[in-house]
Every structure is written in structure tokens, then in C-alpha cells.
Length: 246
Image (cartoon, rainbow, N blue to C red):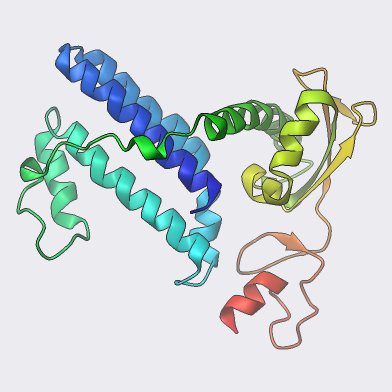
């Protein structure tokens, strides 16, 4: 599976531990906040925001797309069971509309309590993404400033040039090939040394320059690419999308 999907499933296992402990202690406010933060912050604002490109653009049988679908299905399946004691009717509705195996129980209330899969826990992966999420937050603040100033409309109109050193450089290099997807921009360039960036961040080891993205907008995925217009059969598509539609 893709590293990001492994991270999402790892966070699910940590959530399961926290929620089960809260139920055992009758601390319903604790489980409410844990599940709410997981869904709104880690899933909606980070994970789901990133993987929607894979889900919308890739071929149906693309391994990266199937990886994301697998993670989402497992997360949903466990979440509805964890939430069912306190939102029983709503979770029952979700279960009835979900795709499920032919031999699945008739009701969500008949599903076994989700077990923690210890093999999904990975301290190294957790540290890697914790560090990256902190850096991503700094870059997002700079992008948001450009959106407010109308220098870009949305983040896909941007090319982000990162000037980093020390810890920030190491973190960025560890995910460099995936940075455009993870930052939801069209292009990313990483430079060693923090002196050249135009805009400071909350970190001394990172500066950011935001430029208009190179190339033209792909009509299918909305990213900007210099490959748009080079395929005579699909002049409005980037190289990636042209390969998908054939």
C-alpha cells in the first residue's frame, strides 16, 4: 500500500485503542472528541483532501487508487462499529448503504468489535508524517495568504519553491517525489539553504516562494503541466490524464 494509506490505517489503530479505553471508562466525551478530530482534522483536512486526486483521476484498477479505496473501506467499516453505541440509527443507515460481502451480518449491531491490528503500527512512519504535517501547515499558511491576495485562485495554480536546511530539508527530501500531491499544488521545487526564499515561515529552517505554475491547466485533473497541448489526440489533457483515457 501507499505510505499515506499505511499512515491512515495506523492512525485508525491508535484511534481504536483510545475509543475502546474511553468506552470502558464511560468517558463518552473523550471518545466523541477523539472520533471527531480523527474525521475532521486527520481525514477530511489532510488524508481525504490529498487522495481525492488519485481517486478521481487514476484508472479504476490503478494500484495506488485501489490502495486508497482499501484504506477508506477499512476505516469506514471500523468507524461505524465504534460509533454505533452512541449513534445507532445513523450507523445502521450507513451499514445498509455500504457495499459489503454477501455473507455480511444484517445489522451493524451484529458486527464484531474492531480489533487493533498491531502490525499496522509503525513508529517510524508516524514520526515521518508528524514532521511532514507540521511543515505542510507552514506551507499552507503561505498559500492561503496568496489566495487572499488573489495572486492565485486555488492551490493547483501554484508552483511552490521551498528553501530548506537542517531538519526541514531532511523531512522534505523524504517525501520529495510526492510533494506536489501532498501539498495539493501543481509543482514543487526543493532547494538547499533557507536564505533564498521570499516568505518566512514559523520555522527558521524553511522559507517559501510561491509562483504561478508552469504550463497550462489540464481540463481533466485541473493541475498545470507543460505537457498539456503536446498530445495531438488529447490537446487539453496533461501527460498523465492522456495516458489514462487512452
